[in-house]
Length: 327
Image (cartoon, rainbow, N blue to C red; front, side, top):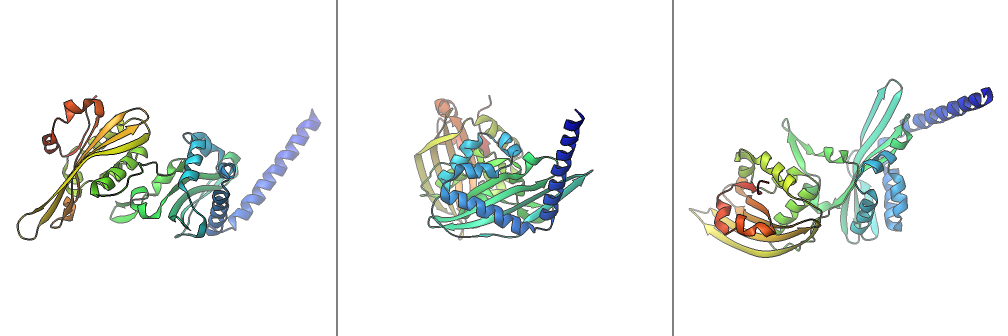
């Protein structure tokens, strides 16, 4: 028994020494170098079509916490297309370290821009590069991949205490995010609105919906935050398909040079659990006041309840902001 205990003690000492050496080496490696190495491995795996390699790059703790991680990996490979022509770490990598009674953790987060034959992608990442007590915590924790042109939707700017910056809090969600929005062919302003709203609902991103509304509506509607919460509570299921049922637009010339474009649209949106109607009244053009551009009224109802909650367009004038039926 003494020999076994001694052997185990020796093993623990060796492992602790190895961990300390590894941490020491990492401490001298710049965050940019670590990010370059990680993104290089990830992009190699994407080009090879090697899903297992991507899975192994993630921390075990993140895999356990992510919702349906294997499906997230499949979605990533479905979304990221084309041969890679060039890539670079875009902007400084944030490096964070914490020390607590011998517990040392180092994390990095940053962004990478990738050009393929099919267009430009942005990859946001958060990775734990060292944790001397929890080995299963080391690896990528959060990955966010989207078309660079859609940055304001999937990586929006936020203002806090007068400072405008990006919403890095989105990387707190473990796992992989890729857009799961409807494949909308953008023919008009309402198509773009639908895409932004449904995308945002799918990722529980309230600011994405708020940004689609006219600023005056979002700011002056007293219970707008409660309306947003009610929308997220009401909508159920994962997006499946959409169909534009109705669209109309009308441009008005008011006094002087004031031009307003009013649009109205109805979309049938299906999830794996429910069929909905998304009904929009918007003013995408209002040249006298930019704060009036955007959605004025959005009504989301189950398709089966159309007669009760959408008898005609007059109901859209009754509610500013968001309407969903009260359960």
